[in-house]
Image (cartoon, rainbow over all chains, first blue to last red; front, side, top):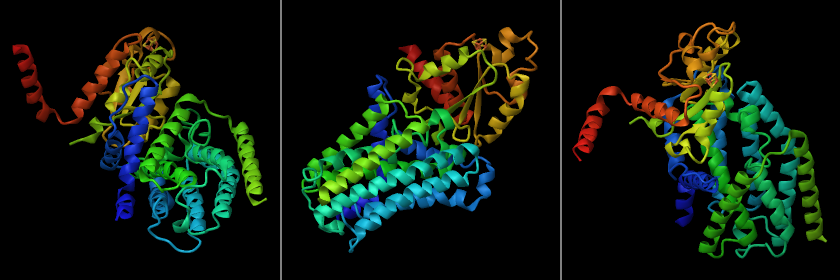
Length: 282
Length: 153
Ligand code: SF4
């Protein structure tokens, strides 16, 4: 029962977390900040307001990409943190889904047919090759240690002690996937106007924002799930909030990497992931 | 109920200003003025924005682009002309780049005078523009009632 409640409520929890994040962000900068329910108002407003007349509206992918992106991100909550839908090899499906949701975001960027959107999508494509590989390698370490490919059998006490290096990699990859500074080169609001979403408006933009919020929730849930397990529910919830805090702190306090630096940094992450996997196997 | 009032997103367009007004607009985001507490966000793309802040004289080179930016915004848009440049040309009125004020290029809903205007003035203009959005008749009697109550106290 709890599982289904969590699954259905996931978009709302995600938006609430986004609100908490914005409030935290403001408090760290010594501002008052928006109310916690602000993201709900934003989404309602976007749906109510309707689209601007962009030429992209005639493009099928432009209309459909944000919706599939949202649904894909939602489906990931079928597996984590509670295995509602469980079968053999669902760990692999989850890895595939995370990559797919990144890919759909890129598709949205390309479909918008604006130089800024395409630019953001290209930056993301180039870096995706590196960081998705590291992400997959990092998850393989957990598969090797736990010896299971089914998320329902995942040890509930977590595997932090067996793979301490993986914690660092997971954190780095989490901030890369969520486009949190210093890794938000693909979005870069001050350089390429948030890249992907530049051309979107109305409901399309609302779905993109929702999907983004849910991806944020997913990583805040997934990292504690892998490292600390879901044995103690209260501890787990506390850890989720801790990760929200850490990501926000990183966002407030760090500047952004340049495009040419960022690939080098990702390669360092990739090498770390390889070392980690080799260490676990040997 | 119109939710634009609760989360107005802002886009700034620099139509050939001296950057003085733009700095004052940026000051809206700092801890002292902090317009995010009204749910405002500074958006880079005009397609996301509800309110367009125009600074500067709308020089020859800028006219076409200013129109384009205005057309790209979704419906229910409001425009605020910030600074005396945007209203009348200000100190650049005699210059050769000045052709016509911003309100001849795109419709303007609110003017904020000053060279540069203070951030408080811009916030005031923002709130007045948002009040306009709700349709004029419903809110007016309420406001007068509130004011009269305060006056009695
Ligand atoms: S109004 Fe004054 S401060 Fe603003 S752009 Fe014009 S000259 Fe600069």
